[in-house]
Length: 366
Picture (cartoon, rainbow, N blue to C red):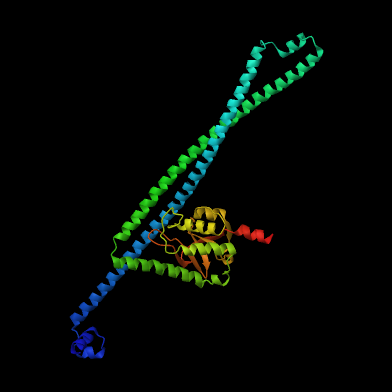
């Protein structure tokens, strides 16, 4: 008990009892203590400033990586589309070449027939014929033969033109395919470079600093969300989802806890637009692959008119997307090193809102 009392007195937990046991500090000691406290405060502030700078750098790197991810996903989608178009063109070319070969055989047969006739014009043969009835029959046959020959020549010319057109289209597709492949690889390198730089910055931090960094991110998101809520925005927003939206939300929330991986579309990992893509496929609607195309192509609604299931597009370059689930919250795949989670809808700068099932609404109205 005596030892405990000494410890409690020394730590100041007994208040006045502790001060009674010791004499007042001398002026020099008091000054040293004040300076020590100031140095401690300065060190803490410097540490906090350093962490805030690191947070900003990491956030900026991941934002740029996410933008590059959108470029990668877009180029990947174009590559897949162009590959399908090239396969289709190749089939058309093959069919056209076969048709061309058949027409050439027909043209060859006509030429052989003319050769066997001694090269004499059909009109002369008719004039030399003795039987008038046979003459008329021959005239009819000649006209038919001439029409058939013209038809073969016309088809031959048209088929050659089609073949040239398909060949040129295939060449153009290949050139675009290669351009998009290069774009995709460039985006891939850019993403890896930025993610590695962000991870390197994070790896330099001690465990306590990493925890503090996470808290700084959460605090920043909380303050931004609180400011959004304080605007009274939720007073007008509906919490009623469409039946398709409910399915999409159900899928998205079932993915909570799965890792973010750039370019991933599930089932085990996702990037931000990969999650919304799969969620809305589960809801019965196919939407564009990237957040930028989702913003560009889907029906836009005002924030006050949004409902659960709608997609909120973030940042001025439309590089991030989350799904609104009601009560001021979204489900989203945040960034590398994080998992699919729920956060405040206003925790990031909102560009706008899009509705994937707007066509269903119009159909219901009709």
